[in-house]
Image (cartoon, rainbow, N blue to C red):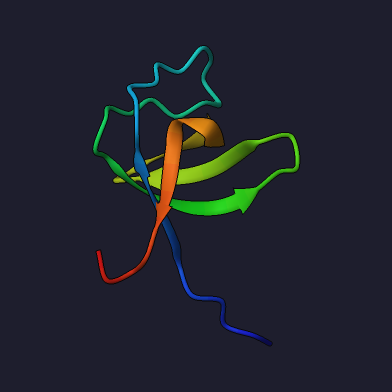
Length: 65
């Protein structure tokens, strides 16, 4: 089993969840990406909160950042 390195992204804009399955965040938040869907919606973890968010609101960052 391959151990994939964790993928993190930084919010470029504020995003307010439209429903309970979505993740709200503000510019500058660091989100751990759990799943990437071809639709452009990603499943992410921000603190204790988990939910879907639009990938065009974030930029993927390296682990060093």
